[in-house]
Length: 181
Image (cartoon, rainbow, N blue to C red; front, side, top):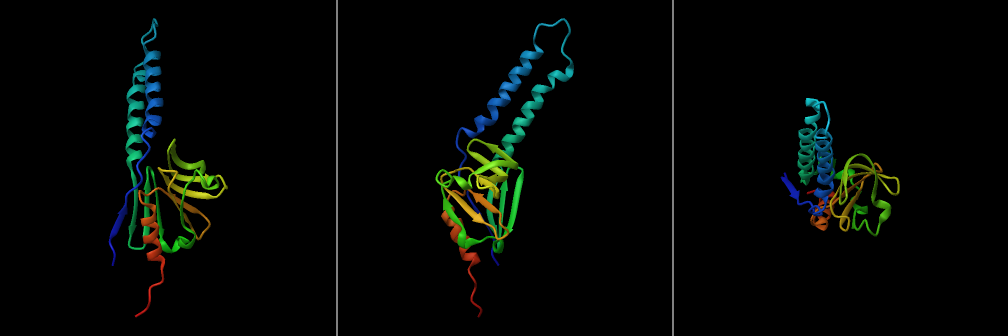
């Protein structure tokens, strides 16, 4: 019986968090400016709740951005990406067609339309339609080294492990038929 083995996820680009926080800070600044405008009546108390609410949303999204995991538990691939998770038995993956490639070169496999996911420049997590209109579950933090895992049901999983070849080798090892004794 095997134990759970985790694979490091490729780090996020340094600018990704800024794409989350700059709009939050602009919203806070706009709210404070609107509240403090010269007026004959004081702003309602609810107006002051905008600032802590936006801060809370930013904190929750920042914490979600940190939830990234790729693991193999026995013969099951576990992927956790922000608010989303995917659990697949190795048998559901067409390992013979799995590849490590660059989405910069293979643009037909790039996530294009978010159907239920979390997306920032340099980061895609959750369910997406690809440029080729296929469906994919994504945890992409590095577009230059993506492990593409075609599923036997027609879907796909796109992952950015720090060492994609190691994960692919382990999946191929698990998918290989075992000799009977």
